[in-house]
Figure 1 (cartoon, rainbow, N blue to C red):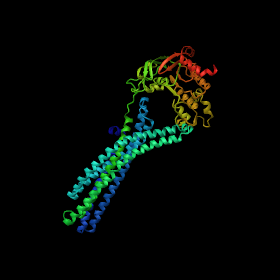
Figure 2: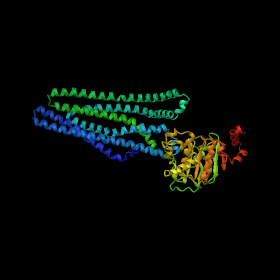
Figure 3: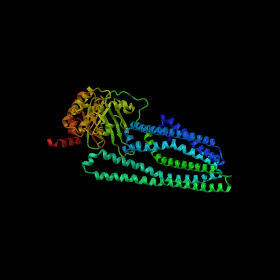
Length: 577
């Protein structure tokens, strides 16, 4: 896990190395200052001249300034390195997600991915800054102060060897108890974010059904769940402070009492005031180092679970990859399904598609119809290789889709979904997702074909109209027509319309189909629809039922021979029968 995370340090490696070096210099100087101060105290006690005191004072001022300078620079470099590391982590996670197949995406909830890229990365960022700064400073300070305490205090310094193991055992117990709670709480964070995401996304539905109270209660339960687990974890971690204070006061009481006793009984021969002041200072240094170490342990305890969740995203193996020698050219829009069966995961109890055999010629218009859950969308998702067939072979242009370069294949297969997405930006920017180099004239041409030009022209800014996130400032039918126009700009060899005219009227639907037929006669067009009117003029219609092909034929043939198609047609046209 550490190696996986370390790969994201990259250009911030130098700063990550410089910081511990600066911290080391700061610590060395800080540990020498009490030694110099003790000597000054002894000099004053023995009656030194003013010049000696001034010399010692200058040395102490210079040392203090250098320590301050090294600490300040280290603070700056550590902050830059930690923030840069967090930036790279988010970048690596985002790039990894962009390369996921649909199967990979199905493993993670959207809310979980958002939590990992925000809260989890922030936890790791804070832990990393502590590691390159405090986690270096504290052990060095502890070691140097411990050595200097023995030099200055002799046998009195053995108290630290008694207290340190006690502290180490206590911290270990705290971490052991707290870590499982942090594992639980991050999963509940995902659930909390999911609740927020669903509520905001479905705000119109919530308000139309007057379910604000229900959603508030659901959020309160999720928030309370997170609070309860965090409170348990924080209560355990809170023992860290009293434990540190106990150890600190034990050492202070011992040093003050035993040190004072030694000075008095030996009359300063075995242990003088200079040594006493120095060992008190080293005592605070040692215990503050232990306090800092405990803080690092607490942060690492929290961040370790976050780090695991981040690495899960970065190391997720892409299930769909390019072959060793991919095919880059799609010859034509012919499609072949040969004994194809498919299920969404290995754990699935049944196949979504079973024993599909289809031959579609390039340039044909194919309609697909069937009831809800008939696996119409599952069928067409295998064509651009959004998923791989579990059994059998899917061919495009006579070549197994698994032998194509993924980008080359998908650039020749345009898919327009029923709930397609528009992104924040102008209409022009959204359309140019289909072809980034498209001219304004080409944009107008495809929008006329998709029956979108008319409503775009009515906007005050026309094609420069800004589309809100998710296309919320345009209607469902307008959104679908813009998505069709975007797909047409790709000039694909295969165009798949997955119920993408469901929100437009039948007259506009007919216009769009006619325009597609005339504009791209050589493109294979696959139209998934709920309405028979949307597919009745197709060259052939495929009737799907329960993941199998129930019938294939023209509108007239299926009316005469296929029960499912006839029932759908009659139910939709009985008013005019």
